[in-house]
Length: 185
Image (cartoon, rainbow, N blue to C red; front, side):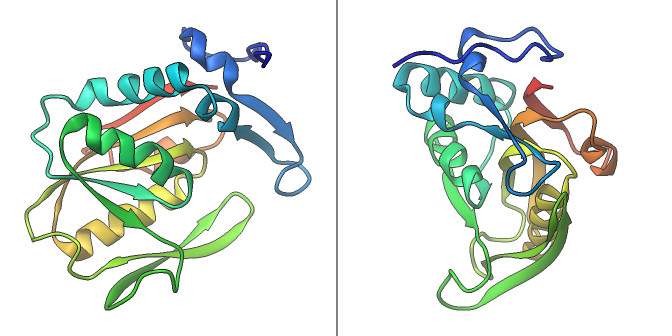
């Protein structure tokens, strides 16, 4: 397997594993430059290093759970929860969870959608970290935050693997809730 070359436009100093994230132009629609993390996930050592890098800022946060946003927030959030020794709560697309759910609509760079969480996913006051793969407009993270607020849990922060700095996602995120991005483009 060959390693794709690192994009020239990485803003922050990057670990070697960052070179496995590739740009896919015009996906899922024309004009969108998609950050594909699948080559990173296919390499066990680099995947583990990425999860460790995402976990680092939260090691002493006394978390109860990680809330991972579907789909790639699951892929990163579940091993991150295991790494931090806490539970994992999926934030899913509509109609995927059995039982009573809470629902939150959101807008994203190329449309609109909803996410849901089990109404009994966590007890009030639980301390959670919200995880997603990419921060662009902030729509999915903000929807997960709204679901956490409906659950009456304490959001300690949010973690993303990649932040796209040319899109105002960070500006939409509440300033009083820490947001850590491992890579910034």
